[in-house]
Image (tube, rainbow, N blue to C red; front, side, top):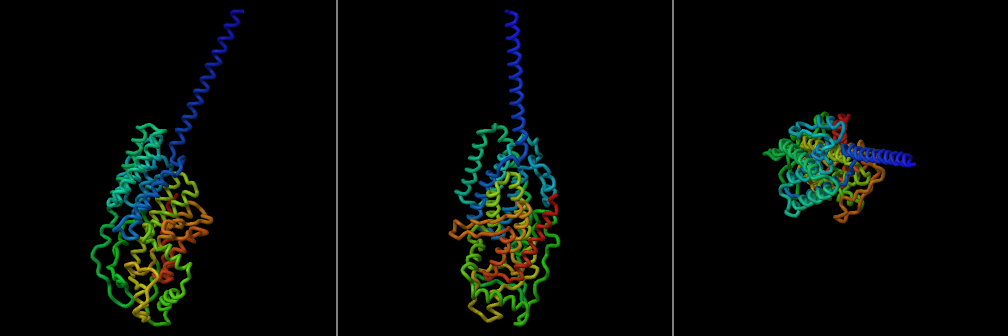
Length: 442
């Protein structure tokens, strides 16, 4: 009897030991599964990026001394820094690294599992935001530090301090490399001395400020993506003429006629896409992108890719656009209407920017952004843009990304700033830039 009991006890102990071993191995497997998932940036939500994009829009809104189109650089390079900070956890990342135009000095990545990717991005965004907004207010600089600190505290609730420190170091090193790269893109020479050409049909400073030409050499900037503006140049603009029967005269007359019968919705459209004061035209598309990422509940990896490529498309489309503007130096509607059509007191609904008319920058950057977002997100479905809720503007609703771009373009006709032909040429130009960028997506 005693022997039998001993046998049963030994058997029970053996069963217990086996059970514990199974539980232990199962626990290890769960831990390893969790670790494997954390090796990919796609396993995280885009919440951290959303917070930084929201702050970036605030920084743009409060910034001074930067031309409207100049914020394309902030958008583009910050997006590249965000994406590259996640590079160890994004399979196939090399395909895009090879497209960055001259980017060097990126840090060598450790093993994918060494990083907590939201912390990588947090550090990169904080560092590059400080670099791109050195003249931010005390309150805005404090907001950058506060967001970085608060997010790190959240991370430390589940992650070890060494892992967060390692992630932050990588993110900051990426930001430093990207910012150093950005400083050599030529933007510092954009306002070099420039002699405004004089002649029939050529642009001249416009009323009421008669400001000097803005960034005449912006078109010489280095693009963010290799080959993005190849063959993107528009066909030459309409031949200048003062003949009332000519296509040029009729194009200007359309601007004048439209200005005399503007509807409330057309005025609202023009104001909605004015963007200054506001978050700038590049910032407007940054806001649209942020809203789409939030609606789609995109992963961190997908959101960062969309952020980098949309920003690059906006930036590079504007380089191509400004190259065209100063190549052709086409007269603005206000000058022609006052001087040729003898409507000396006519003014556009919105103020005229201080650079030549052809092509429309709103059209170029918007078409480029829309096509990139279409490729990444697919059809948008019904989308309502809340960018300017804070200014009291009624949100505007669209059926597709391309319809957003089309409205951004046509709004400049209603604003009295562009001819329809220049708007259409800008849309084609932007689409070509996006197509060039997407040609390397595989």
